Image (cartoon, rainbow, N blue to C red):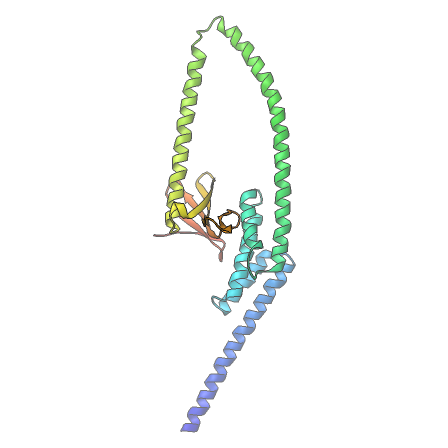
Amino acid sequence: MKKTLLALFIIVVLVLGGCANQEDKAYDQEMEKGQAALVSKDYDAAASAFKKALTHKEKDHQATLLLAQTNNFIHAKRSINQPAQTKKLLNLVINQEKGSAVLKKDAIALKKQVVTMREGSVTTASAASSSMSSSEAFSEESSSSAVNYSDETAPPSAAPSSSGSKASRSSSSTTEVQAQQKEAELAVIQAAGYSPNKVYIDTRDDGAYYSMELRENHKNDSAADSDTAPSIGFFRYYKNSGKVMQLDVLSNKYKEVKD
């Protein structure tokens, strides 16, 4: 009887050991695929491989780290037309401890490209502004002449009254927008579990929702720099519903933050 039990115990150990070895082998294969995909710049394939690796070793630190780093880079490429957002995501990739050296190198190259694009945009905008100034000067001269002619027949108070009304409406509208944005920021900060004095917040109006990045606020240390302060995450606040969504780095999708 003892020999039978011992034999069964040995069989169970061998079976479990074999399963563990298979899981380890499958994990290693997916991690190798992911690393190879990064070298060939197939970032979506790399993210998929790291995600599969986690099915073989749930909560594995290295696979989780590489998946987050890869998703940040993918998100940065997709937001290339939003330089500020892209730069923040690339900083996360570059500053990732024990991350992929290949991804860091690609992130540095893309960051230089973004800086070049931004400088080109500033130069173009400056030239356009100079051209516009000349055009506006000519327009003002024409407008001034028109007013002189109209003054002979129209009441002097007509134009100023209209202008004052428009300025008042514009000021009122701006105040409402600022109040709405402030309310949205406070809602996101609260949903993230922080108080306003503990975070930096970078907000962009994307129409139906506000896009925000939150970073921890550490006074009197290096993290007080908004480019290096620890990131809390990326959020969206939907104006109509008041719903708060947070970017999940593993799935690279926004998910609702519930109280």
